[in-house]
Image (cartoon, rainbow over all chains, first blue to last red; front, side, top):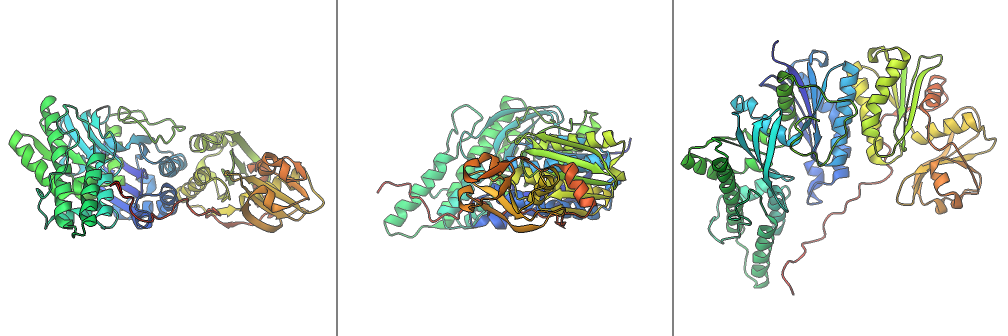
Length: 342
Length: 216
């Protein structure tokens, strides 16, 4: 059999993503983002995102078909994010995917968003080593996953006990008067700052688990900034941004490397929107090299939520001969990582 | 071959009409499972009618008003199906669809009101003229039942749930896609673009300023 042509639909948060792959070859990755609509609220508003998905889905899908130069009839399968994510936004993608699958008579795979973040790297760096460690960090998640087989066996080693890393970036950006979403703005501001300016706390850094905590760090930054403001002194935005970013990158990479060593895994993959952070990438590269771990980070457009990652996981599932999902599967906002395919 | 469907209420209702008669119809009431049930419902209808999706020539969908999440399931399903098959998709106001059923089953001889539950102690409502065709006189609106002040005949889940606010209350409760399809085929109901009628803005307010973390 030639490599399967798979269309992937992603609507778990504020990006309407439609991707098309042929096996491990990326053909299209089209995104319609509603991020600008959420900026004035300081975070993603689920109803605003759901409305935007409904409007954007069909046009985004057509842009993807044009880009890939394929027709709907050519597809071998359709894959869609079944969870985890926002219940209302997931449902738009799931209902659309079911409808396309029914109309076209194509098999449908409801897949796990987190596993798709790991699977996407086959498009960039080829097949995933088995096993490999995945550090997935975004506005909604901060998890360490042991990926034995991305189509069937993914285990969570730890995750955040409070805020996701990306959420901390958004909240600290707000404290510093930087726009939403905070990640890119803090990264830019930090370029001129001193990462050792304030030793902000590294929550859970040495607790021996693979869990994370960013709420304490976020509050520590807010307290420091407020104390400065109250004393009538200027806030050195670049330095605070750099010191905050250093604390996040430090604890993420430290735990990821420790997880690799604890489980005898030689390959670390980083995904999710926060993987676009330059300091996280640099520190991960440095620490992996020191420990003899191979590091894989997809390009930023494949790290943030997108449809290609869903299509990539769908293609893996087709090639592994997995049975498609039953047509009545629900969108599951808290889908556990143990369920790669619903 | 027309597919008509509506998911603006707890009823997931869909029907196939061949231009002469309804070939298959299904209504399931389950407010929380629109996303799970609509797809299999459509598959079952195609099987019952002995047709395949490419045999469709037109799709009509209720555009609300109705609770947003369920409403979107119907809309995105209709758009995706029509897109995949290269078909036109039209909308109908979901309250009009309920009025179709009132006219068919109750044949009121005076102006009447229909309402469905909008949650938060409000209803979506509209007022209609009696007759064979759906003629909307007022609405759609979203209001507290007591604020509508209507003494004429009133129908729908929204008046049944708040019967104390209406003087003459009766079923039916939800739209029926079979009757909707028949009304569309006979030109007794107005079609509109298949865009959602939300009537409410998203529930969100911009933050007003930072909450201090330090004690005063």
